[in-house]
Amino acid sequence: GSSSSSIREAAEDASVAIVSLANPLAASRLIVPVIFEALHSPEWRVKSAALDRLTQVAERAPQQVSRLLPKIIPTVTAQVWDTKPQVTKSANQTLLAVCQTNENPDVSPAIPAVVNAISKPSDTYKAVEELMATTFVATVDSSTLAILCPILSRGLKEKNAVRKRSCCVVIENMSRLVDSPNAVAPFGPLLVPELKKVVENVQFEDIRDVALSALQSLTRALGHSDVEDAMKSIMQAEADQAEAEQKRIEDALEDERRAEEEQRKREEEERRQFKEAMEAQRLLQKLALEEEEKKKKQAMLKKEQQKKSTKSASGKCQGCGLKKCPKSCLFYSK
Image (cartoon, rainbow, N blue to C red; front, side, top):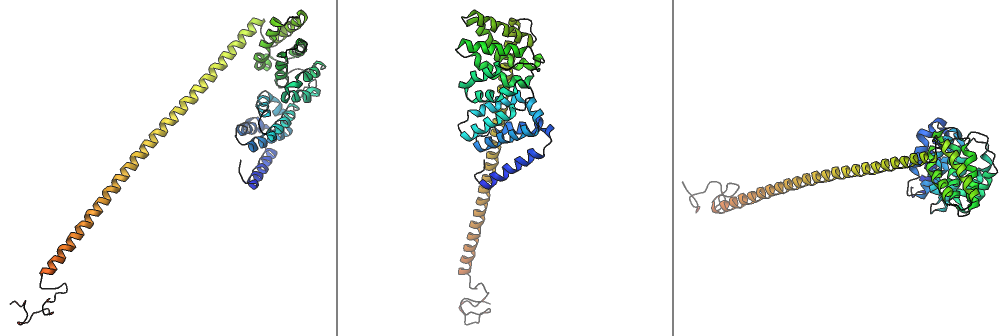
């Protein structure tokens, strides 16, 4: 975020070199967390550069980035709506680059349409149509779910019932090939409540049946015996998440309060030391004035004594000017 263009260029060159030289295995532990931290910067140039480096990481370490997609996609998606067009452009390019690290061959042809729908909600159904044309054969992992679930969740909220049906079909086909409940667990709260709404609220029976079938498939993929069990689990997970977030907020407030208290104590100690230093300074000044006044009084007293004395400071008589007065001197004494 430097105001100097030469410094910004040097910093960008350094970041490019670091990512180029880093071991791909360092992506998940070191590089990506630093990039995420940079995305919280208020400076748009920092955000844009961070997104460019994430694109570079996706090219250098595709397998590591693919495993991180459940965290990367929501983080980068938030930057798509940035007020700066440079950040928005970089975010779109980064989204495409990171999504293309996914190794599922069934989803690969639809990735450009899905990424486009993330940045343009009006194109959501186009992406769903691409997915409708997909035959799911390969195992669906958390990386694939991270790409598809946000679009499918948005599609389930469409007013058009036919579009809701298309999303339900894709969810059912996808759920049958989920590799483990842990993979789909983070996306259950995103899809299960919306599917349940379709089952309960859509007026067309055939669409409700398709939604119910998709809900049952997703419930089984989540590792639950029935829909109610899945809803309870999701509600409990959300409650736990809310509790954890509340605890995090309380801990942050407590840390802030503790920091403020420590700051207050430091300021009080500094004020006390400053007050003591000022008192000592005033005391020294007072002593110096008293000493100066004493010297002045001594000088005046000496001067008065010299006026009364017949002898000058050099010891000569003030009458005759000699050290030893002759008999003719007015101040002669035996």
